Image (cartoon, rainbow, N blue to C red; front, side, top):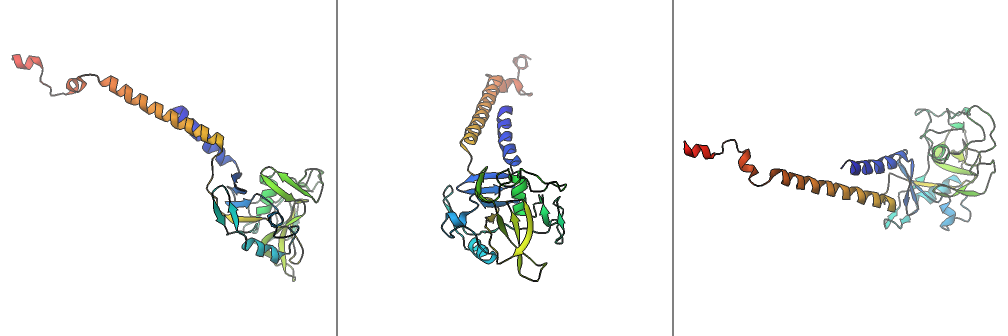
Length: 263
């Protein structure tokens, strides 16, 4: 019984500790941001929608809003997509002052969940920025971990991550020109940019999809259920043996004894 409970707890704790969960079918669930990412970080190109995946801000938003993605594992189509977005790091107001330590909305090392791309880059993928949080230049930054910019790389469960910049679905308004936020995966910094520029687009949708346990999880789960069944059967057998024949008669406080008949 205790072993079965331990197995179940191990399975549950393993899922809870992970921040980015591969749900299969080309979908990744972030249990901190509570969003599901496309596993393919340049699906606009892979799907044939765009030649290289580079689009201006309006085109990128249109692509995400009109996207329908087929989940081959659960046999479901999802059409509630948007671009990864961001909100003020401090939770209240935008701060356009450059900072190395992620304390503002412009600069490096933005690990706050308020920046979905920043959280993906620094926390989920464990990448480094061109500048450390103390402002010191680093050589092992970027999606390749060696300072190389441009190109694409597969990192963990993420496929086709581009070493350039990605649009946020959030507009920026600190300049007169129509701007929007961008996260630069080549160096790990975030800032706003003119909406007419070109960047890549990474789609997310709210919430999770139904998780399909991995084969190892199935084996452990079935083993745990088997142990529970064995433990329950043993308890029933033990209870039956302890009662024995006539046990109910002996336990009755008002039973009539042979001595009562002779009196």
